[in-house]
Amino acid sequence: SYEVTQPPSVSVSPGQTASITCSGDKLGDKYASWYQQKPGQSPVLVIYQDTKRPSGIPERFSGSNSGNTATLTISGTQALDEADYYCQAWDSTTAVVFGGGTKLTVL
Amino acid sequence: EVQLVESGGGVVRPGGSLRLSCAASGFTFYDYGMSWVRQAPGKGLEWVSAINWNGISTVYADSVKGRFTISRDNAKNSLYLQMNSLGAEDTALYYCAREDLGDGYNYVYWGQGTLVTVSS
Image (cartoon, rainbow over all chains, first blue to last red; front, side, top):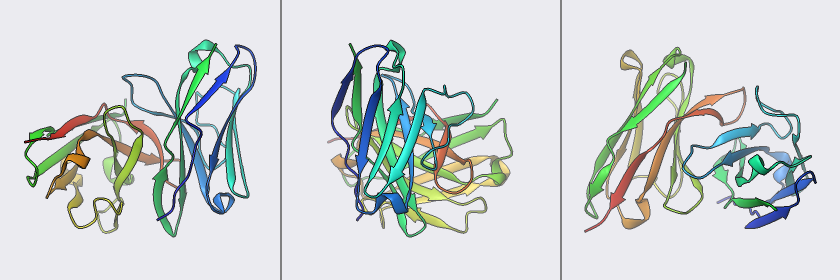
């Protein structure tokens, strides 16, 4: 079955740019989405179809997907961005799969 | 306002069964595909199953295939997950989620989840 891999943790200083990667075989041929989850809360979709932002998501969140890697980029990271982030991959031939999650620490 | 409210969770013995429900409101339920996603305590998200708008098409994760059945009742604005042959690995918070934003399983709206604990 298809799998995607994320780093367990990423650290960033306030105001800097955070990049969280998601790796999988030919991931660029699939759609990648990203979810933010804070403790005790349901996930929030921040990027879908590789690069699109849902309504209400700040412009500092952006995404890319090419080759074997999808990347979530948070520009001007704020303390409130500290959360777990999950990538999700999908195409019409595979079931939906989530990555293991990345804990983003803003320090 | 879109609302998804899960129910039916609880403690069940290994090998037992449970049926989860998700009550939807604030939108035209039959216009949307729906999914179940679970999260084991302290762990990551795991996609479980999805169903299209009319219930004709269903898909499952390999980990639950043959044990879980997703269904819906559009007249009752409700989504269901019948879970059989439960094991400890099925202990998790189960979320229902609405599919949005075109192609792909993009989940904008989630419920708060219902906790299933499989324990003897």
